[in-house]
Length: 264
Image (cartoon, rainbow, N blue to C red):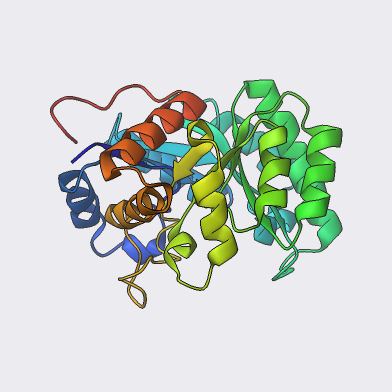
């Protein structure tokens, strides 16, 4: 089996506290050679870095404040985030973005938080991992106004070709997760079949969004293989071709060093 990279796995979260080592061992045994663990606030960003320190070259961290937690991004928190992001284990600023579906933080606070984190990513020359839910118009507007020169990924992309073109035109990658395996998501399947292969990533977003046929269970990094398999079927390619292409894309975007030869 070709090597796979799970480009978005919250393996530092409390849902894995009871069996994290076993979950990671199962992923590595299944051919998931590397993964990126994004933070959602300062504490979870610290946990991601700690985990990356335990699995060097296998687990990488991203540092960010999620739109749900936008009101926690005080000046002090941003300063702490800046220091955390200087760790050699940090490969991105994320997970950051806008979420107008749950609206757990005021929209203005969300826009302020993402703009400040765009500036941090530019300062540190790191890519951004974007959360974009029911907020596409504002996201594109902010990227055009405040995100010049940034690179990054629309994580867990859920949208149509028009939305995908916006992201691609801005120079961003599209990352597909469990929803691409759901039979009802025909528009998303069309995007996964059509998007330029050199701009596609795969992810689990675990412990959330478990792909078919494991829905109803906690998601794990090893399940990223189901996402890759679905995209291979949609594109008429082999699993190995998708695995190799998406691993190469992840390494390029996040500047990942090759995984260690002797495992984790």
